[in-house]
Length: 349
Image (cartoon, rainbow, N blue to C red; front, side, top):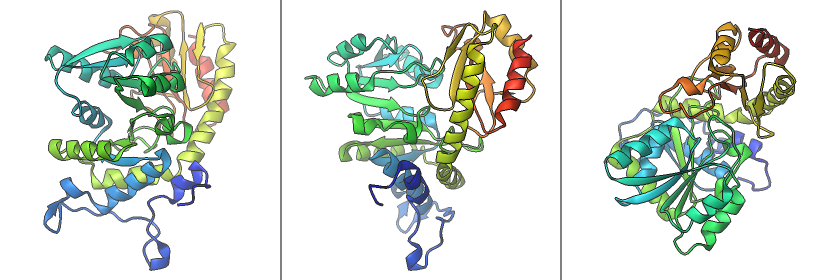
């Protein structure tokens, strides 16, 4: 793999068999419960390995695939001793916060919640906690955390807490946390990496060999292994991530401009790039009415697919602290004018 090639090119080439050796152009499906004397749970399969090689090449580390994004969260928490303290953004993925809350109720962990953009508080936490769970942009508020400042503070801290970045929204093409100094980068590959709303998969990328070994051992212990078909589909989705993300980002920017000038919209949240947009209406009732009027855009909880989806997060258990009128929009690949007409009609409600 040539280091001078762009991430978009590497996403297409990484993990492919060597065609010069007469191998197929794409890694085949290898459904195997055991390879020789070893369970595939312990050693993986060629299909998993190809996906892991590709993601690792993009993130600059060693990747380990899991059965779901939530399985990656569990694996990372498994690295911590009992009684560890974790700092997590107030606004972040519901599943992550739920897992942390559950562990805290059981007395296994202490959780500290910090505003995503309160960089000073994160820098302070770098000297006081055992793990910083960073997520940027955040789900669903799209706050951007100052990774440079926070990770620099960690590097200078005597405590040197473990640092994890949920890179699901940014994707490996938009952000490389390991290059900034993070220990681990995690993804719900269910979202943008898979890109077609047809699989559940997670991946952890480690920047150090000891962490990569620990993460893989955690997968073996829990049995949270990825499915063969899911791994194959996720790798196929990764190949087109560059063109999908570029097109969806262009449409997102178009919609952000229109939303910002609409009288029913009180605030637009957009980090300046990417396919995720959040915008706020006057209150929860207005947001619910708008969702009910949408025809082209799907009301759905997931994101990162070729179809545009919207969700009012505040109505979900665990997300009641999210602004009531906030709608999270995952922009897909439909025609931008069609999407705006659908939004404009719904906003008129």
